Amino acid sequence: MRLGEYVEYDATGLASLVSAREVTPVELTRLAREAHDEVNPRINAVIEFYEDAESVAGADGGLFDGVPFLRKDLGATEAGRLQERGSRLFKGYRSYTDSYFFRRARDAGLRTLGRTTTPEFGISGMSESILNGVTGNPWNLERTAGGSSAGSAAAVAARITPIASGGDGGGSIRTPAAWCGLVGLNPSRGRISGGPDRQDAGFGFVRQFVLCRTVRDMSAALDAFSGPFFGDPFVIVQPNRPYVEQLSQPTGTLRVGVARTKWGAVEIEPEVLQAVESTASLLEEMGHIVTDIEPPYESVEYSRILLGLSDLSASWLETAARAMGRTINADTLEPVNLKLYEHGRNLPLSHAADVHEAIRRMRFRVGEAIHAFDLLLTPTMPSVAVPHGGIYCATHPTISADEYMDADAALFQYVGVFNVTGQPSASLPLAQSADGLPIGLQIVGRFGDEATLVRIARDLEQARPWDDRRPKVRAGNS
Image (cartoon, rainbow, N blue to C red; front, side, top):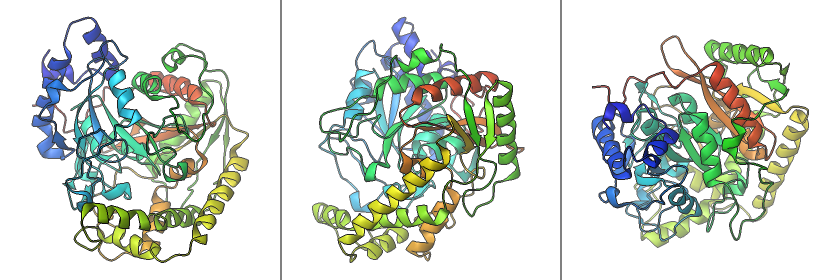
């Protein structure tokens, strides 16, 4: 197989070639390295391609037999490997924990070949950090790839690997998926175990999953990574059939709520709204019942929750700094994270109860507002990918903690709310702007009902296929 052929396959397609013995896992690893060497100097998505990549273990015969995979440098860990979390505070840190997520990855046949960039601690939805620099969007290098699964998204879009890991605590899979033209699912709370040491991380907001290019890869990844492990705080309803089998099941008639108005202070760009309108019309043509929905929450509610959660991490940072033998200051933390640390370090213990109550109220309010619908359709982001820098970056030198969280809540108005509720939500690359930038639309299901999302995503992919679109920077294009 040549590089020009490799980049045309999704993960499921490559696995089928390995199963048919038309290509070997080592050959795919070498092709991934070739793709990396060709495009990574331009996009800066992969910060480490493992020297021992060709000997990385993976089970034979799994759903993703022999498929090259990359790891976001935050969240799920591989024992013995570096995980620096995009921060100078953790530079050189190696994890001693093998996460359940990567055990499942190996069981599925994935070969994890390296680490991808993330903004410091995943706090920003942009693709830059002081430690690792700027990750460019393969569609336009002057634009952000999104965050915090920035490098994974850019690497998949540029065809280094067909699939990579991500984590989503406030839109961190769906945002880069929308801005890089990918499929990005944030599963239901509890669907993917965070064990053995990060069960229900971040008050249940954070879930691990993948970024990929096709719905069938998303479905297979659900089968590969889903399921509880010892110590998980609760076990949600399990599917009655494998998710890949949902691809052949009828969708039925759904009650769809459509968001045509802004849910935060940032206006919806006209081309994004047009994509929503067009997709809503398509769903009606498919026989679904489509109704407009009003914003189900106030932006200030989410902003206060974000700030409250950040406040609660101050003691964790102090513990981490001691373990690393470093001091928390401007040499170890970026400006915004340093301000957030200072904001939260002296708050009373009662603050945690206040944050819990704010989350409970928002969950109830949103749940009450949308309970009549089987599915929601929203923009993923109100705009196409924005230029690098600006107020949304944790490297911003002067913005205050409150101002930063208000700006964050305004821009990520459609995604973070479903980290609060725990519902499954996926960004699909259903449109493009006039200048060729991807536009992602978000579909949101009922809690625990990824099956319906798989079926409707399949329908939309078939009606408006996207995998033939090509970013400007991609492997095999020279």
